[in-house]
Amino acid sequence: MSDTKDTLIELKNIKKTFEDGVTVIEDLSLEIKKGEFVTLLGPSGCGKTTILRMIGGFEKPTEGTILLDGKDISNLAPNERPINTVFQKYALFPHLNVYDNITFGLKIKKMDKKVQDEKVKKVLEMVDLESFEKRSISTLSGGQQQRIAIARAIVNEPEVLLLDESLSALDYKMRKEMQLELKEMHKKLGITFIFVTHDQEEALTMSDKVVVMSDGQIQQVGTPEDIYNEPSNLFVADFIGESNIFKGKMVGKKQVEFCGTVFDCVDDYAEDTIIDAVIRPEDVMITEVGKGQMTGEVLICDFKGIFYVTTVKTGKAEMEIHSLKAYKEGEKVGLIIPPDNIHIIPYDTSINHYEGIVEDYNAEKGLVVAFDDFSLTVPANRVFQTAVEKEGMLVDHSGKEISWKGAAVVASFLPEDGTLSDEPDSGFVSGHIFNFIYIDDHYRYRVRSESEEDYIVHSEYLWNQEDYVSVQVPTDKFVFELK
Ligand code: ADP
Ligand code: MG
Image (cartoon, rainbow, N blue to C red; front, side, top):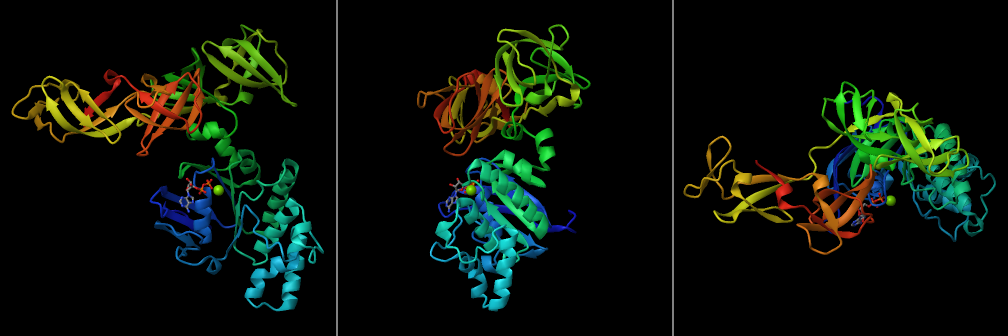
């Protein structure tokens, strides 16, 4: 199937359900090559640690297998795997000195004292803490403790080193330093590093390969450049770096319209395809009015050290632009976006589709359709083409008579036809804001209900993650189809 020649670790269709019954990973597959520096990147709670713990052997997958060099290791204990972990909290023994911390695992293996000494010397050199053997842990700085934790992990000469947010506890400067050192160490050791972070900058600077995750699912796997330049969906585009996102549509061959302007682009999709255009702030050029493809007015211009962040209002939308020049508030400017800098993501037409069952029917009220989270009462002719009732049967679009009872129906609605409300239970369903992104002049919210269904709704108002909201959609905005 895949090229397994240099594959070291393979996760195959991993599912993880915890004892409390919550499934945090549905079906995840991933290949990691020998010697690679791979980073799992995603927001807190997306399942990064869970995956790392399964690779390390601290958790067992509920379903699926983990292969190492082609052999199934899913059921091996942590110490039976050629894998070592550097935990987020360093988990050093405070009452032992550096030497005893590093050799803890070697002593269990009853390794010769002289060999132990040599190994400790070598790993201390590796982490730049030569002759620290006798120091007590409590006298070490955070950065030094971090190094000792790494030394303790690599002294076992593992094939794979797992690092869970290993630099998160360090201050900014130390962290930057350790990032470089870890990369150096990776080169010197030549082993596979699997690193976990929620910090995109850290992931982009350190990795050969980045695995972007959200919600227990892999969103994209690629080199840092791929992930930044060619985000495969809006989550990645929004999570990695800064993005301007505009809704638009294809209007011709490699021609796209957004913000009321037609642009040449390099992506080829069918005319009329609804799309989201992703534009990085550094990819827009500001010029004189009349010389650009579009015109806008400067709202704010902030100095950021090396460049300015200029926010330009164009039509209803706002665009954030990085420029080397400062612009005045209220100044009119022209904007140019070269074709290469317009990244197009076709709109996902599968969102907001819900499957239900017809539970009841009467000629006056219509059909009662029950979905997981809600039920809707609609005139029968919105589901079945005609509403001719014949002994418990209705006629569908092809003239076929079918029993309405138990008929499967798919209801859908467009994000722009929905609204959100703070008023509890004022809509057809309620849930928590799971995430949101800013598009054109409004937010696109993903609301997750109790039963884990998602509802995508646009709103110009700002809610925060976790806010509890009701989703309102007028019944006449729903589209129904017989399944
Ligand atoms: P991340 O490392 O990306 O922040 P985790 O893998 O730690 O995410 O957690 C993913 C989800 O699994 C979270 O919702 C978390 O609450 C849940 N989770 C983690 N460990 C357990 C556990 N032992 N029992 C139940 N739920 C857990
Ligand atoms: Mg974690």
